[in-house]
Length: 200
Image 1 (cartoon, rainbow, N blue to C red):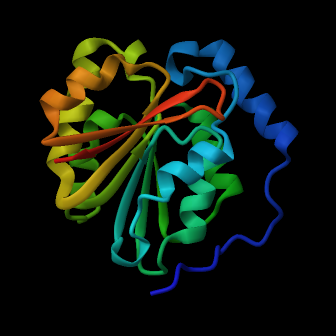
Image 2 (cartoon, rainbow, N blue to C red; image 1 turned 120 degrees about the vertical axis):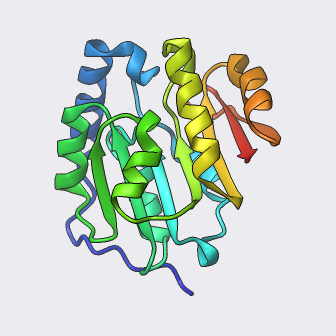
């Protein structure tokens, strides 16, 4: 099945406005974002290239920010797929809903630690892919572990958890939580990013 055409028809959001919103929220909540600017197109491409779009029916994104990954996910995902976006920052929730309207996407103002409940409330089964860039190194330890454990439980046996971090410190925890973890590195990003693929 070919990826669906995006339902939104407006031009992509002005880069200057995106950057200003992201930077403003970085200074308000630096531990929630980890970087002062959004991810580069190189990192987005590297991560999303690992998705088998034809077999994908349910995707989840943690911490979309200004939608750098969200826009590309919506562009490539099938017409009958569902995307659940979970964001704790209300400014970003409002922005995503306004700029990327799409009937396949549901934006949740909440915590990724509640992913099991969020999926159950929507009668969605296991997830094909979870995509994340939330800075686990700045989260309280119990919160990060709760998110990782819940993520492992909701991913289908053939599914994958795709995430990037600006530090390799999370790697030992990923190995303890998931059955298989592979690692890549994307230098063309601010900051250069460690990219992980985790199997449940």
